[in-house]
Image (cartoon, rainbow, N blue to C red; front, side):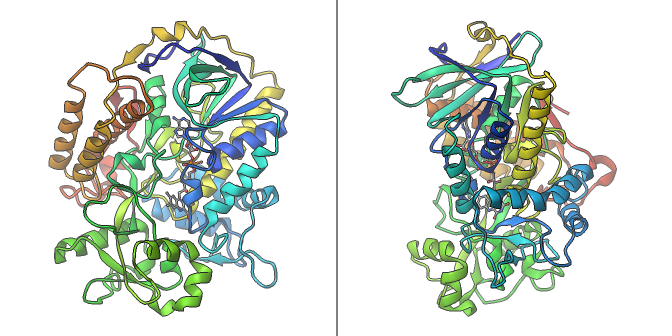
Length: 541
Ligand SMILES: Cc1cc2nc3c(=O)[nH]c(=O)nc-3n(C[C@H](O)[C@H](O)[C@H](O)COP(=O)(O)OP(=O)(O)OC[C@H]3O[C@@H](n4cnc5c(N)ncnc54)[C@H](O)[C@@H]3O)c2cc1C
């Protein structure tokens, strides 16, 4: 048996075999790989660009865990549940906050150097929605870069772990029982493996990160095209909570025409006391929420968007001039450099900011062991929906989720392996081609999809705006003729599938909750919508 749909692609020209194949090399993928290797399993990591090219490297603020004096997992749980607006899976959150502190310690043991105080204790800061200082950070505001450096260095020093860079994973392969048995991929290189091939494996772990590139303005890097969610949908796995896309409230505003990845001005800047102001210098968050600028992200983003609409402007400002030059250089060197490279000096000037797509709370549905609804297929990190984030992610919970659930996946694979429950899978790679090929969109469709999504299914949504987006998306596939197989057309086709599923879910959820804001249904409706919307293949329920 094979997956029912697959991307149009040439027949695999080469085949490799391993025990566990991990797709993606961010915090989630590399943590799974390192941990399954400890158990003696063979593993391969396949990644689309260079090892450090995902969102992980870009994370600034830090990683949340109840490590500080007086803080407890119970308090971290309470803050996470509030942000999730009634849709968190409490057992998943409890797992996250209870296992989180040890997962951070394991990361430190792997080599990640967090910022310490004079006594050698981890320095902790606060971010939106947290009632405690519980965000560990590294290099001031370069937390993700340090985590990525440490993990990449660890995987590179394991000669038994195979790393395949510049390789775009296309589709899942399954065996006669419908169990994941490997995947197809396209390697962009001139090495031993080149072009389309197949990797046979006993289990497959998706750790492909987010989908921010379905919108015009995003903090996500170019690789974040939702490939894992698209693969899962084609493979018949359940995908859930897609409508809950978090828009980061403070992204450096680079002008009305700016597209693609845009620099983030971390929440930690507000955590350290920067104020949000309008062009007249009014602190418009004061009086809107008890935490003012440190209210949960959706509240801040909504307030910024409303203020922009009221004043007819395209951005607001962040005022951190009172930090002084020394604090900017020590605490926020990355943000300082990024602002200055765009001609803004935060030491003396206001920083123009506006919301942009930042984080996918939803994704491939998993249980607490990271298992998806397709046996043998796991998902971890931003591509997964473990139930931790509900309708909105609490700041800095995502790196932690990647770590905690990666460890759980590795533990599950290890115990299955030891129990003899992870046999070799037999898959007929040629037979897999019986799956129906999906025609490919031309690379230019990417910009059309992004524009349609940002216009109709972005920060503010309504039935009318989403109907326009859905119609526009459908038009893009009206021509059944396939574009030539190439990385850009595979990515555009994935973006389209994910965008279509997201709009279907967002149109269906007729309420405002967490980071999903409906202008036509401005209230939360627990009677009808205290539930998840699940997409599986072409259906949404
Ligand atoms: C600017 C920014 C700042 C952030 N700040 C924070 C923060 O302070 N704290 C926090 O907790 N979270 C933060 N986040 C979110 C967090 O960084 C991500 O959620 C997290 O790093 C995701 O990790 P991941 O391992 O799931 O995916 P990623 O790190 O995105 O890695 C995904 C990997 O999958 C690969 N991939 C994708 N598709 C394919 C394919 N088809 N084939 C092969 N490989 C593929 C990519 O190349 C990449 O290697 C931030 C995100 C951004 C963008």
